[in-house]
Length: 389
Image (cartoon, rainbow, N blue to C red; front, side, top):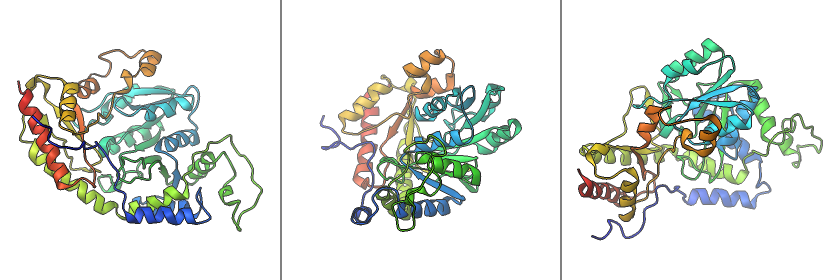
C-alpha cells in the first residue's frame, strides 16, 4: 500500500510570511542588527501583551530560566523543584547555578507537575519551584503559589510552551515571580532562536538585564549610539544572552498575528479531536475549565492494551505514511546524566514513566493546509486499522 502522502509532512514548521521577511530585511538595512531599538520595542509590546511590568528579550528561554534563578540568588547548596516530565533545559539551568534539581512526578491528567506532591519534596535547602506549562496547558498555579508562599520559595514559570496560555483570568508569565518564554522555530511565536523573561519585580528585572549582557551596567547596550557613552562597568561576570534586532523585528510581526495563528491552531485541534475521539485506541488531550490552552502540542495517548505494537513502532508506521511526529518528552530520569548523577531508577516517578510510554505529538502548526490535516487524520486511522489487537 502506498503512503498516505507523497511528500513527508514535518512534525513542525514556522509560519514565515512576507511581513516577517520584510521586517528582517528592514533590520538588515538599518544601523542596528544586534541588540538595539527594535529589541526594546519588542520587549515593550510583549510586556503589554501579557500584562507585566518588565520583559527582557534574550537568545533563548533557557537563558531566561538561568538568569532568573541567578537573580533570585539560587546557588551552590540550594535545591530547586521541577517536574520529571520536561525538556532537559528546565533542570540543566539549575545545575548551571550550582544547585540541585529535585524532581516531582506528574498529575497524569494534566501531564504537569502534581501540586500535591511538591510539598513532600521541600527541605531546608529548597529555594525555588519551576512549574512547566507543558504543551501549552498551565500548571495549577493557585496551589503552587500557596505552597511557595508557605515556604517563602521563588516561583519561576517555565513558559516555553506558554505564549498565549491563560490560567483562569491571568496570562502565564504574570503569576510567578518570573517566567521564561521560548520563541524557538517550532513555537507559537517564532523568531528562529530567542526567548523572553518577564517579571513584575523591579529589582529582579534590573539584575536580569545586567546578567543578560556580560554583567554590564544598565543601558550599556546603546553605547554605540549617539545617546550612549563609551564608559561602562562590569557589575557581575554575566552572560551573552541578548536578543538581536533581527530577531526582535520578526518577533513583533509574529506577535501582531499571534491571534490569527492561534485561531488556525484551534481549528486543527478541534478537527483532530473530532476524528480521534472516535478511536478507542487513542485518548485525545483533555481541556480544563481553568485554562486557555496555547495549543502548542497536540499529544495523543495510545491505549497500548488495544494495539499489537508499542509507541516506537507506531511512530515508524506513521513515518511510512510520510507523517512526522515527536515525543514530548523523554523524562529527565531516563537521561544518562540525571540517572547516573542522582541515582534515579525505574519506579521513582511511576506516573511520568507510564505516560511516557504512550505519548506521541502529532503535527500542529498554522501553515498546515486542510489537506495536511486530513492526511494526518487518515494516516493515524490507517495505522490503527493495521495494528488493532
